Image: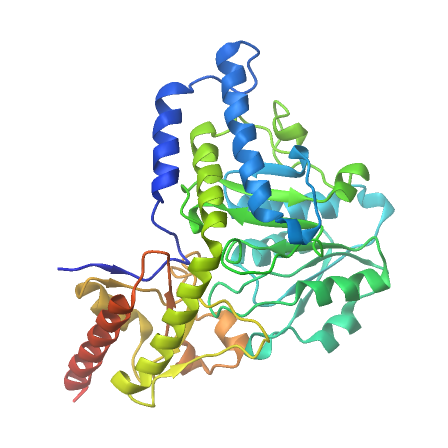
Length: 396
């Protein structure tokens, strides 16, 4: 049976470049980057080469930023990077500033749950709605005030592909106070869009396994301003690795894979984006042809959208049932965020988008990767048509 993987927003297959680099490092670089002998220095060199590669991919020339190595903090995941940014920036110099954090109500669970934790500590969180995937800028501007410390806005929504205007969000915040910090969760947007959240965001979180790298490695980029003003406190304490911002021996093998994946992804970004746009257009066109007009692609109303994420509603059929049926055909999609799919709750992202409860429960997420082709789309739609027909017979 041919297997078609279309759940790349959950994780991506390890790219060849990352696998080769990790294999080499695994056998040749076994020192601790904090050790001062030759093997330790080799490990440190490996980590710094990867750091440079990730920074180069995150800060292309058009951003106008020439980053320093200390501006990238390696973590164990994008989730940890979001926690470090939010808790670290809200609690740094806490006595000398306000208590408010503003975030989109469709943020990733690692941002939503961290905001709830901060609320339990006495901070105030204001959630901005996103009808049709677009931040309600009027509600946002009303929420901004001198008590605001941090604004969190994801670059690409992980369920709908909606793209936030980080430049506009940042501009509105800085107009109220230049001291308001803007954090961007770019896990789903890094090397998946032509635009960068920089230089508009003060901090950016990314993750290796979304770009063909290994699981268990993420990073937080922070601006020079944050470092100079000491506006970030660590949340993990110990030996003072990563310039004191993230203690714990670095995952040298995983970091090396992250660097290799970032370098490879940056080199083929233009071609990959063109492929995503072509495949999305083909999927949208063929959906009505193969499945009929009742099946709907949920298109964000934002001026920009990520071509690699497609939200599809199949009225009358539960998404969980459909994805299991598709899995039996060897086609792998998702019913939403992999991080929230086992909670038993319907998607708060899709409800904010404007879908009803029943529509939310009938929506699939199809997410494209570098390996996908038009043939994969044909196989997906054929399998989905057969699944719907089979389930319809069972209903009768």
